[in-house]
Structures are given as structure tokens and as C-alpha cells.
Image (tube, rainbow, N blue to C red):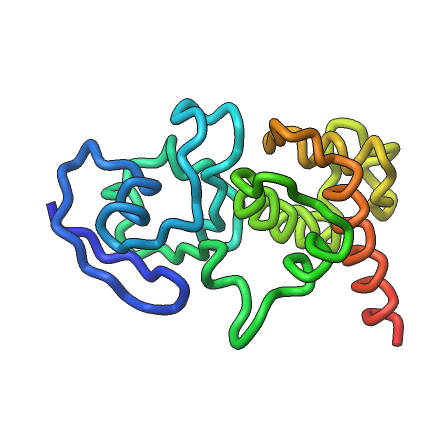
Length: 172
């Protein structure tokens, strides 16, 4: 079955079995191996990519369902160097083995966009007030991404730094 997907700004037309997941299309057909296959059940978040700007577990998405959609993987987050989140993950030791890191960074990228847009979460204090990225808010919003090495202090510090930097840049 033919499907055309824009991945990291480039159109790709693939002839796929309808059972192929978006993750397998990215890894096996486009050779973009940054997104990882952890559990293959949508429980760990290692496969997180951005689909039309929203974070998804690519192991749960059938590729043929996304004909015409835009996918951004860890490889496409920034041009010419690391993204601010990638730099912050390095600076704050937000990784050990690194297996979960691409999914963590893709998820955090979309999560920061959600916060900036004022989308409340389950733990948000109010549906009407601006969202503050507290520890509880961050933990809730990133709960779909697991780290077996328990690098959560570094991951949280990296995300918090980029969130604060973004707020500062927005007010200048």
C-alpha cells in the first residue's frame, strides 16, 4: 500500500504492508534509527515522535493511517546542531545509557509547546489560569516516557531549564 509521509521536512513515498507501524517505517524503511523500539506496546515512550506537531507513540500508529502527515523525529528537531533540549540534556546529565533519550526529548519538545499554549493537564491547578511547570506538572506531563536508568533528576532539570529560558526569551 502506497503512503506518502513528510519526515523531517522531506517527502517519502513508501510501499508498505498495512500492518507496518510508523516506528518500523521510520527505522526499517527510512533508516532513521533515533526513535527506539522499547516495549512495542506504547508503555515506555522510547518511540515518541512528533506527528503534525503532537507527540505520539509511533509503535502504536500504523504508518498507512498517516498518509500526508508530517513526522518529526529526533534527527529532525534542529538544523545544523543540537536543539536547546538536546544541549540541556547533555549539560544536566539527562541520560545514562541514552536509549530513552530520543523519546524523552521529542516528548519534552511537544510538552513545552502544550504548556506554552496553556493546555492544562490532570494536575493543573486551574483550567483558566496559565500553566506553571511545577514538579508535579512536569512529572504528569512526562509520565509516558520511562527511563530505566532513573535519570529523572537530570531530565527534569534539562526540561525546566529550557522552559525557563523560553519564558525569558518570550518576555524580552
